[in-house]
Length: 243
Image (tube, rainbow, N blue to C red; front, side):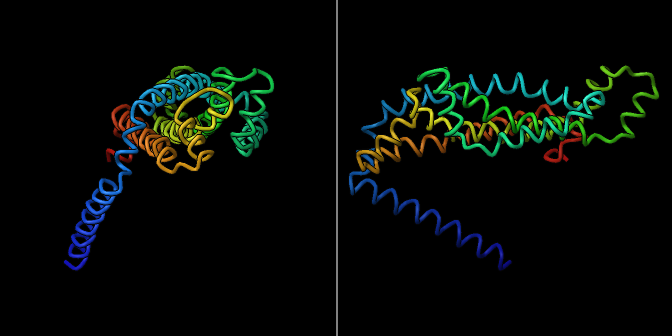
């Protein structure tokens, strides 16, 4: 009873705070200033989503097969070394990756997509590898015992049991991708970073927020969509969210 009471007070306080923020935004003119940038937000958000879709889609297409290959018994001798190499890659700041991409590919969309692809590739590969390695050996032995070939074991036993972990990697990678795309503006690829960095240069907080708030909302939407896909696709038996 006391917990529900405090939850009710918390919700009421949140509503009051939202209402007060709305009144302040309207009376101070901030809301009108924000709406002034709405056409720019719409145009740049399309560029933002395009960069995310291309780089994220390519990363998924390559990272999952790469993780599968690294998890095979024949790669046991090299897999850990290669995975450590990928782990080292994650420690390089994305801005540095974009700068290196610009050095080799010039400026514009192509180096931005390549840099974002590299940054997105690593978490998905690592989760695919970890998810497949975590599948119970007893399940694999049982599948082998009933005569399944290695390919059948991979498709019918290992991948379904690793899907939840793989989706967790995709979810993390794509959310980070959306949040990283603003940096692509620095090498001439557009996106909502144009409003954020121009707002910083001009010391215009409203312009900066016009880029930052939609970026955060896009990240939340992408995360929710991937979570929904995982909920629907991952089998109930290995999906904790459907337990």
